[in-house]
Image (cartoon, rainbow, N blue to C red; front, top):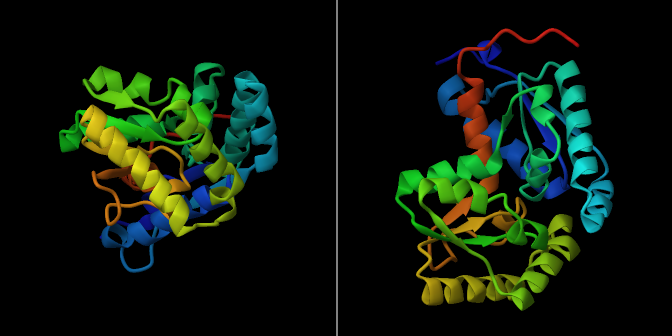
Amino acid sequence: MRDWRKAQTIGIAGCSGPGAALCYETITAGADKLLGSHHHPEIVMHAFSFGEHCRLLEKGDWLSIGKLLAESCDKLRSLGADFIICPDNTVHEALDHFDVEAVLPWLHIAKVVAEEAHHRGLKRLAVLGTRYLMEGPVYRGNLSPLGIDSFIPNARERVAINSLIFDRLVFGEVTSGDRSALLAVIERLHTEHDCDGVVLGCTELPLILNDDFSPVPTLDSTRLLARAAIDRALEASPPRPSAP
């Protein structure tokens, strides 16, 4: 077994509560096979009010979201983080508008998911998430270079899924009716576009969907990111950069 004390420290820049909690839980529960019973890499977490992220999303102010993420990153660095993950797919679009990696390296959630899809040989993915995520470049820009096509729900479906996420899932509320509606969307994309997998591109969607329900394999962005963070933490620790 490896020594958990020699692992890199994982910094989590949180947004919504359920997504950050599931990510944390997956790391703490998933590392013991490598580090010994109950052990996991050291973890530090910081989160601004989720409402502030929502306010900036509604304005389309990606630069300000990037600044918030960079400030979280700076706080996490001061607590000893060696690298950062953010269990929120949508806000990753801000990384195209502000250089958050100037503070610490990031594991990009969509890159992690894209690499897993490529490893599984998936070629045509349905992408579910917030309206901002589905209509934005985060997944399209990371799947396309690997030769993977992506398809999103229609406009009516996007509005309904966005409402489901912000009105219920971020509060941990799950209903069988909501699950059925999501499964109908996945089935349509599977039938009409031959999608052979679905990206759960909102870190709360695993609360309501998984392979037991979906007609096609699911790519759980939350847990994939958490497991990639464990792998990264167990790499040889690089020298920590000096404070600016």
